[in-house]
Structure formats: structure tokens, C-alpha cells
Amino acid sequence: MPEDVAAREVLEDARALAASGEWAKLVALVTSLHPADLAELVLDLSEETRRDLLGRLPSDVVGQLFEYVEDDELRDLIRGVGVEDLPAVLEEVEDDVAADVIQQLEPAEQVETLAALDRGEEVAELMAYGDESAGGLMSRGFVALNDDITVLQAIDYLRVLRPSAERAYYLYVLDRAGRLQGVVSIRDLLVSAPETRLGEITQRDVHAVATGTDQEEAARVLQKYNLMALPVVDEDGRLEGIMTADDLIDVLQEEATEDMYRMAGVGEDERVFSPVRTSVRRRLPWMMGNVLTAFLAAVVVGLFDSALSKAAVLAYFMPVVAGMGGNAGTQTATIAVRSIALGDLDVSDVFRACRKEILVAMANGLAIGVVAALGAYIWQRNETLSLVLGCALFLNICAATLAGVLIPLGLKAVKVDPALAANIFVTAITDVMGFVFFLGIASLVISRIQ
Image (cartoon, rainbow, N blue to C red; front, side, top):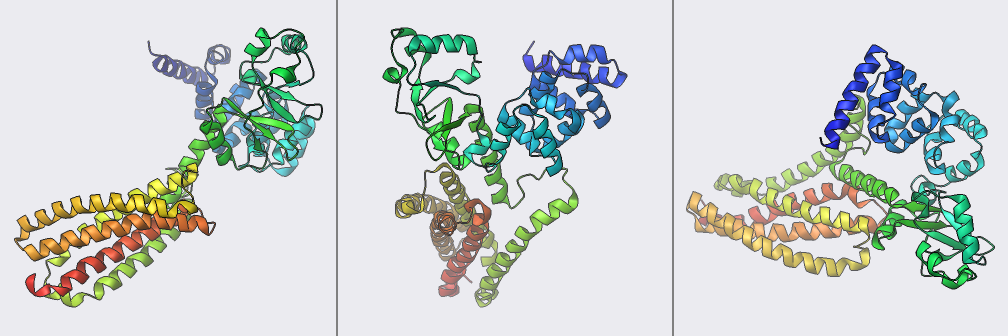
């Protein structure tokens, strides 16, 4: 039986036991679930039932749940545990997870929870970093060794420490001041002579980021060099923590979702069943902006009312010109925004990017223009109208494609998130320029279109 089917059946049994109040059977059943599945079950329960179940589960099991819920679900889980019982649960999780949980509390509750934790000072240090910085995302779960100890001493230390597999991705080598010197692999420890100093076998070509580095940039470094973990150092080069591959996945998912929502003009934490007032407040400003750009396009159309009155057939093809230009602009803007987010495109690349995109636009514009012109001729049997439509499409696709590159780069140059407003400006340009090209050219040869 597939694992996902088996998991669903267990979840259904668990919900039935929760509904009937058979707590002993329920606890025995759910402790066999993966924490991700258990978190799904717990959040699906009513608040009262959730509290009853969490109060009967071991602290280490409850602690694992915090690693498998989204930020907007943390508060539900915290209420289920209870602020008074939260310190005991947080003793079972990594410092970075504890910091994320405590940041969801009220200020007074944060102070009380940190004071009740055995390692409250370490967690408080993580909370001092920005939420979207490498320092705010890093974990303290790493293994560090001094560069002046021997291989034999290092192996003896690891036997005593017994680090988990997740913490032993890399063994970090530090000097006496705690500054990162490099990494050493377990293989090197095994094959080196026992009396060899770690400094002699340390790989010093190590990639690290500062605690203040933006999380997206840090994740990009970890991805670029295909690392399992990325060390995070302070301004003096002292090792403060590590970012792991699961951090990378979370950051990239978060940033991609944020860009997608912003390009659509909605809040990144909005959901299908968000309150009506919240959805209206977040969407209406962008729609107002679109109203203004739509009126601008209408004004442009009004400038050519004489041509439209003489050849109403032009109105048939106006949506074609605007729509194809909008599609071309949106395609390019989406690629540009994503490339900027990944660090592949910068303001200094503007000429190279424009040169490449204009070649793409000319090829696409020519193909679309020919096809549309042929279709218009078959429909209306007017050669001049067909040529006007083809030329307008070619020009508008070229203009839209350039706008799709220049607008995101321009927004980045003035320190505005390109994902935030690129589509509004691109749409305005493609509509306005499309009508200018189509109606402008048509007005010059209107006698041959009537």
C-alpha cells in the first residue's frame, strides 16, 4: 500500500478516536505518525480537542510539530500547547525553531518564556537578528573543532558528542578565537595519522555568509555551490551558526510565493478564506492603479476617434494588439523579475539583456504578425488592414518585451521591489503603445481600410 494512502487512513482513524475521546488509543496511534502528518491532524482538530491531545503527548513529540507548520499556523499550535507549558516543549527543539516560536508571543510572554528556558540567552541572541537575515534563519546545530587538536582527539570528542546525522554534514574547524578556518571531513579524520593536527588537513576554501546577509542571498550561495550546509559568521569571522538545505527550500519557496503574489497585486499571506475586509484592503489599491492605466489607454483610443468612426472594423482587432503585447510583456517581466531574484540579472546587465530580448521579440513579433495578418485577410479580405495589424503587432511585441526588461531593472535601480509594480507599468505601456501603433498606422491609410 502506498505510504500516502496508509497515512491518510491513519489520519482518519485518529480523527475518529479524537471524536470519541479514546485518548489512550489516540496517543498510541499518533506517536507512530511522521511529525508532518501529526501536525496536519492536530491543526485539523477543534481548539479544545487540540489542547487535550497535545497535553497528553510527550514534549519531544510536540516540539517536532513546530518544525512542520507554516508561520501563520504557529499561533494555533502555541494556543494548543499553552504559553505556560511552552518552555518545556521548546527545550526539545533547535534554537532557531524556538526563536521562531517565541517571536509569535506577546512581549511580556516572550520575556517569561525566555527566562524559563535553560538556553534562553542563546535563543534571545537569534531573535536579535532580522527575520529575513542569515542570522535570523541560522541554526546552532553544528559541530566545531579546534584547529590545534589532533585527529585522535577529534575522533574521541565525536564519540563522546555523538552528533546526529543532521549536525554532522560538515565538521567546522575554528582557531582559538572561534574564527572559522575551514572544514574537515570524517573521511579525512579516518584516513589521517592519529597525531596529525586538524589544521594540516583542513579544507580552507569554505563559503560562508555574514549574519546580516539577506536570507535570499544566503540561500542563493548555498544553492550555487550545492552545499548541504552554509556557515554563518559574525563581522570578525567567528562561527555563529549554519544554514541547512531545508532552510534553502523554505526560503526559496517563501520568496517565490512572495514574488508571485506581489506580481498579482495581493498580499503574500492572503488565503482563499481570508476575511473579506483584509482581501479588499490588499487588492483594491492595485486595482485602482489598473483603473488609471486603463483610462490612459482609453484617452489614447479617443485621440483616434476619427479613424474609428470611418472604419469601425478597427475596433475588432484592438483587443488582439493589446492582448498579444500584454502577453509578451508579462512573459519577459516574469523572467526578468525571477532572474533579478536569483541574482542572474542586475542593472549593469541592461544592454546585454535588452539585446537578447529584442532579438526574441523580433522573431516572435514577425511570426505572430504574419499569422494575425493572414487571419485578418481571410476574415475581412482587406490587404491594407492585414498589413496594418501585422505591423502593429510586430512593433507592440517589441515594445512590450523591452518594457518587460527595462521596468523591473528600473524599479530595482530605485530600490523598489520589481515584483511589486512591474506588471502594472508593463500593462500600461503595452496597451498604450499597442493602440498608438495600430490606430496611428491605420489613420495614415484609413482610405484604403474603409
